[in-house]
Structure formats: C-alpha cells, structure tokens
Image (tube, rainbow, N blue to C red):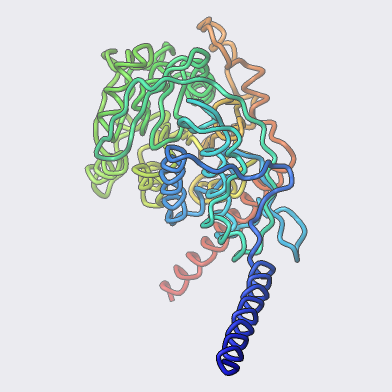
Amino acid sequence: MANATDLSQDAWRSILLCSYAIYLLSIIAIKNKPKTWQTKELLPEPRPKKEQQEKLDRVLNEVRKIWRRPDPDLASGQLAEMELVKPQLRRGLLHESNRRTDVLEKAVSAFVAAYALGDGVLLLRRPIGELLAERMNLMHNELQEQVKKNRFTLKLRAQFTVFDVVPLASVQSKYQKIEVLKSEFFGNILTIDGDLMLTERDEFIYHEMIAHVPMAYVPTARRILVVGGGDGGSAKQLLRRESVENVTVVELDEEVVRISQQFFPRLASAFGDPRVELRLESGASWVERQVASEGTARAHEADRFDIIIVDSTDFGASEPLFEEAFRRSLRRLLAKGGVIVINLTSLPWQLGLVQRSVHRQRLLFKYVRVFQIHQPTYTSGHYCFLICSDALDPLDLGAVDWESYEDEVLEMGYYSRKVHEASFALPQYAVAAVSEALRNAAQERKAAASKDHAEEDHAEL
C-alpha cells in the first residue's frame, strides 16, 4: 500500500510540474508573440462576418495583382494621404525612387480603398462594394508582413467622401474590365479595371483642357490624331473648332466605344460626325504602320497631323504607348509647327513619373511643358498633361492668338484664357522637379550630339 501511495504522490507531483511548465511556456509564448500592427488613431479590429471576409479575400487578390505589376511608374498613394517613414531616415519617402516604397504605397492604397467605406460608395478613383467603415483598421497579415520586412511605420490620414452608386453595366472585353456606375451626384461613371475614367458631372474639365490647350497654339489645325479617346470626349471638343476638318481616333477596345455610345451618348455622338475617322486597333500598331508606309522618306506634309493627342489609360492594355519606339514614331507623324499633348497623372502624388516623362519627351522635342487641371474625381484631384513641340514654346503665351479664339464664341465650363495661362503656373515643388528633368535631358542631348560629331570626324579621317 505504501508503494502505491508513493507512486500516486509521484504521479501527482509530475502532473503538477508538467502543468506549471506548460503555464510558464504559455506565458513566454504570449510575451514573444508578434504584436499586430495598428495605428493609434483606429478602433480595435472587428471580427469580420462571413460575407465581409469574402469581400476581404477579393480585395486581397487585387492587392496581390498590384504587387505583381512590374512598372514602378504606376505607383501612387491613390486613395489616402500617406506618410511613409523609415526609422533610420525620419523623412517622407513618397518622392524617393524606390520600388519597394512604390509597391507598398499601392498595396496600402488598395487596402484602404477596400476597407474604409460604407455600403455602395465611390471613393476618389475606385468604386467600392458593400464594405463597412469600421473595417478601415483591419490590416491583413500579408500586408503586415510586408510592413515588418521593409521596416516601415505607416501613418494613414484620410478624409473620405461617400457617394451612393448603382451598377449599370459590367463588361470584360479582350483587354480590360469596363464598368458603368450610376450616381445621383456624378451621373454615369465609367471605370476601366477599377480605375475611374470619367463622370458625367466633371468630364468637361479634362476634355476641354486636353483639346483646347493645344488648339490655342495651332488655331488653324485641320488634321488631328487622337490615340485612345474611345469615349469620344476629346473628339467632341475638337469638333467645336472651325478649322478642324478631320479627327482620326485610334481606339484599341471596341467595347469602350460601344459602352460610351450606350451610356455617354453626348460624348460618343462625335463618332457620328463625318469629320471623325474611327480606327479600332492598337494605337501603337496603327502609328507604326503609318510610319512604315512612308518608307525611308518623310511623309508628305499634307498627310501629317497638326495636333496629336494621347488620351489613354495609364496601365494595362495601354502599356505599349509608353515605349520609346512609339514616342519616336508619333513624332514622325507630327506636322511642322504642330504640338503633341499627352495625358499624364497626378502631379503631387506621382511627381517621379511626371519627372521621368518630361525627361523622356525632352530627349525628342525642343520644348516640353507641363500644364495642370483640377479634376476632382482623379487621383489627388490634381492632374497634369505634357505638351511637346519643336516649333514653339507653350510658355510663350504672347504667341497665342486669343482674338481668333474669342471670335468663335465657344461656351466653356472650365477652359478660358485665364485658366489656360494659370495652368502652366506650377507649384514650386513641381517647378523644381520639372526643371531638373529638363536640365538632365538637355545635357544628354548635348552629349549625344558631341558623340555623333566625333564619330563623323573619325569616319572622315
């Protein structure tokens, strides 16, 4: 009996020791458990319901797509004002040309877009589904891990405006997903691959500026090429000018034209004008074919375009339009004394992209300038374009024939002489960035010219 009692006591002692050991280990594990990253400003993380979790998973797939995009030029803090601070640097990284930063910005932007808002809303550029406002603080583990790996502290300060929207149409074309939403405030809204292209309420701002700014410098323009512009808005504005005899619109996606004709008939009515020639094919391929058809000689002056407008999306199927070969081919189609306008991006949020674009175009053109618009439904609300020419400096506003413009008595909602002049008055941070890009490009051109002369001299010897 004594042995049995001793055995029982030993067993209980072992059990107690094991329990105490497990207790100690659990305390150690809890202390060493990584803390979930969370901003002080946000509420405790709610437990998602099943339907909310499904929406979460869908948006995370979009985040992963953004992470896989190879072009850092597409990066931006699209939907929240963000401050990215490196502990050892202690200053903003938004202007740093850093791929890791760019990718993180886009991931956070997509995340905030997904979890910040309420039922059926539109936030800046992205239509959001049925998501609850309190989920703004829900940071997915995948994003948390990226933050830890990159040693970033994220501080989100966002102001949101909520608008109810109703889906009208959704089409997956060969190239992209096209959607139309209806808003009491904005009217019909066109999005492509989730990015807002235009709304009935404010499209006139973009289209008036992309058309009438170049027309101010070439008021007698007869032939105009629009690469993209499948909604018809740019062509619609160009047709208002008396001198215009032909507008060639080269649009890749036929579905964009069809959707515009159905839901934005006022803009798409331009395609019914006999002065408009619509080509449904790749802009890059069409331009290359026009250049190839002229052979080694330059195209006849009458066949070139007085104004060329690139009115495309800045991602996806439009990527060939960003290549150097396309830019050089486009320049060959420009008439003497003509100008090229290129839609660009948010000036404050994608200043690096603006700077690189200015640099690239300055390698081809003598004059490259940036002009800006206030487009409320675009990223940051502060959008910009490039205007390029070998014949005239767009900053020489005295060269603009305002009398001929005023003689046409055009009713505008945004564009005017004062707005035109003011659009070239950039903020100081942009002036510095653009000036640097112009200087660097000018130096590259000078170095290339010196090299060519040296090679010619060597060949003569």
